[in-house]
Length: 329
Length: 245
Image (tube, rainbow over all chains, first blue to last red; front, side, top):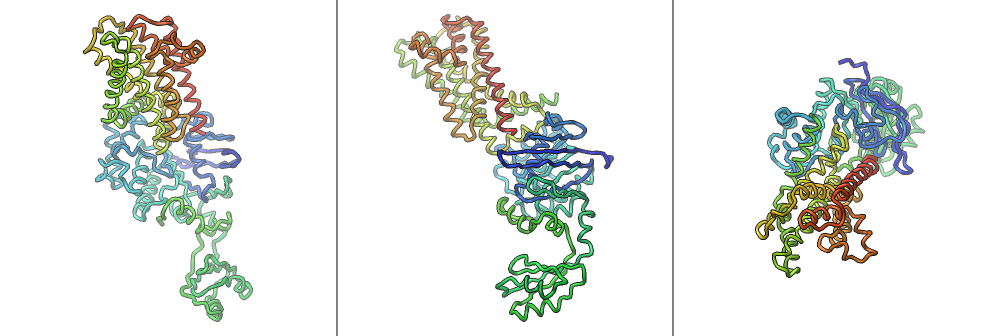
């Protein structure tokens, strides 16, 4: 597969819901076989973008082209090329796991023998063969997520849209889902992944767009996004008995470093120079604060995200978990 | 071919998941039986009244069976988001909705024959013009189902679907000539009868079973077919406007 040709592209896409601008004049393109990440907080416009691209919503302005088909006015035109795993399970509670997969395959016109074979293959891949004959309504959250994923790829789409695929599921299931995403990418599927888990995006994606309040604020390859923070040193100090915020005092005492209090028990120090730990530990201990841990951190995509968007990644994750019900990282 | 695989499987899934469930089968038998019994006893004219009641009982069986099931199942699927699966399929919205409604149409048609089977044990049915009855039943099934679809698209909760269905169904029992001739209604109410689609289906059935009809069969077929098309197109328009927004 030619990785240089475009799998799909959108240009100046805009979508309003009443007075709210869900997607604001966004443009991007995804290459064939690429794993592209869409990273942003709740309400950034990630799901709306996927809904427009998959035909569940109309854009107010802009154009979109999927697999060489202009589907701006006819979103149905390219639906045979795409698969979608939505942010919430949307299978039939009254059907069994096997029944759901066969039904979803039938919607794409796959013949009976082939869809049954494919359903069993996927049930095996996702470790759901024992639950094949159980009704979907009785599945656990992780199982529902996995079966929804399986239903999204039952017709082997060349383009796959994944909307927060690991949100709200257990660690083992999330790990399995990530492995499957990596495998699909290795096989040449174009993957568009929305997530609020920065580590997940960094681990899986080749290119990432940061989206905030409906606007794409930056799009680049991971290696290029990391360039501005390359060479930076980061030190994280875990403290106890710290009843007040010492970051301002530390900034005055150590002007060569950037000091930031992430939460009451954690101080983050950043510098392009080597960070000397001893004086800072002594500074805090003299003020009755115990330093329980000091660890150096390699600058990550999270640092870039915070720098570009001004949004604390940890806050974004917690906010989503509050809605999604549980984390998985 | 691929589109028809999708069409057939949507129909088969709905039949299996909703319409062939024991409560619905028993509803399909008990409901017409209860109405037949009620009007039969009320008429007080013995077996002679059976053929006169048959068009109304057949129509009411279709009307209640189709509108209830379709509006509730679609609203339920919308709530559980499984309806999205259909919207994501590479099949035109028209074909999708035809597939989604065909289960209810079949269910309605089958329901209509329950009172016919009961009547067959009581009276002679050889005088009935089946060549008119069958297309009339099919059209009443289609128009009632599309009415159910229109209701489903207009509401967001299952209880709203039930309430809104009754808003249409109960007046139809009295206004469409099911059991009370339209000509016996007060003159200022009659225009209401003529804007309700079921009126035309019932008129064909009365004509085919009892040779008593107030409009020509051609008019009846044309008007009820037009209602089918208008209700379907209106529902599609509302789906595009409200559900693919």
